[in-house]
Length: 204
Length: 180
Length: 250
Image (cartoon, rainbow over all chains, first blue to last red; front, side, top):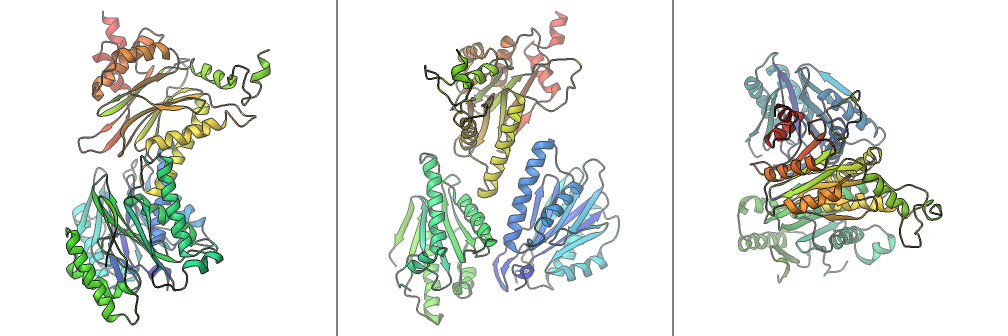
């Protein structure tokens, strides 16, 4: 009964050339029983995107708490939050629960609105930030995701190639994990647009 | 345990909540001990009704906001000294968007909106039947037919007698008890 | 003599009045005018900004119009410092509701929560009431577009068109004259700018002196709120022949 693998799920983010991508699966389960095949794990906060895997109840709690914080930030500052700032917010928010943590592994992806630099980061459930220049993964399929990322990702991918890469990475990792899969969402983020695609996958 | 125990609560005109907890955690016994599932159900019912009264009965909570409210309260209790231990189904008719909705919540306060849902052993016996026969736009008649199939399956295969079922229907016009 | 009944906010005078509340109302009647007009497809809020000095930094952010949440904005008349406290309260309150119910707070409920806070200061002793009146423009799915006004006593009401601040009596009577039932948002904007031009002290209007905000629905059906930029306000003024440059040409 590891809280991180009760509900199952997978999430991955990647950097491309002036773009980033983030993708998640759609399964919600209770151990081996699948409850739903439409449970997205990516949330948007302005132009910054957050993927959450782990315990479903904490995915919901963390995503709404952060929405409250980001909304208040936007009202105060009269602008959207930058991915770097948001990363620090997530980190300090999670560490507030150091001795009774939320069982989630967040992933952040976005493009800095000022510099145009792509940005990704991942965390453990206590808020320790893992900055990365290539890719970050989380969820029950994280081992498989690391493997497929290492072999498929290459630097300087254009948005369409990045979409193909991240989709193949996620799809092939999910197929080797009984707790993740059942459809996927992929976001390709460039400076002036965000494309969201739904992937149909095998339903077993 | 009583044989005829209605494990549902009418929250408002278009919203019904069904709940189940661990065996023995029901009725008068837990009432004297404090926080049982009935107490949680009563708490939710009272608060949803209070919301209606505060707006002079002009506004009622939509099924989606009821489910979010229930989830917030259950999630609060999850990390408290003595958490509630119950699984919930919330059915409601959204009168603004003219759509029926079903929400599934487990004792960890994980929530999802589903086309069909079950809790406990019924999940293992019935979800496969629902996977096969449920379609997005079935009418009430067809829905009841599938429900009957599910209950027959439970009757046949469950290793215990669950002493019949309560069936309630939520439509645009409100909540009705169904003879079953 | 007057000192006897107004040293405390909570003491009624023999005529049954609360002097401190009336003083607060008096303070507001010296503030810049703010008005709101309800149209069939949206709401416009307009406010007079009193520029006190040329040396004052003219920052881009509004000083009289504020966003409360995704579907509600408000105009302020009175003490800005007091207003900031109340606006922060309203924003947190709205976010609290959103977190619990995953739905935007109904407009009247937010107005009511704010007014409950204001009312508290007319009853519990030792503190001064908030010297602010608000005009709220909001949208919710149940009651659609709504316009409310509230004052320091904690009273509030729904309106089709209303005004607060200096000259609000004349603004109110102009609104009564000019308001058209079922007007659209652009008509409402022109009514607003015309009335503001008549009630303001200065003869010429400019984008530094007024603020404009609209709440409406996009063609796709999404609710938007928009605080107007200086060029947009200048455009509107020019369209109605109220801009500074225009008067200089004549």
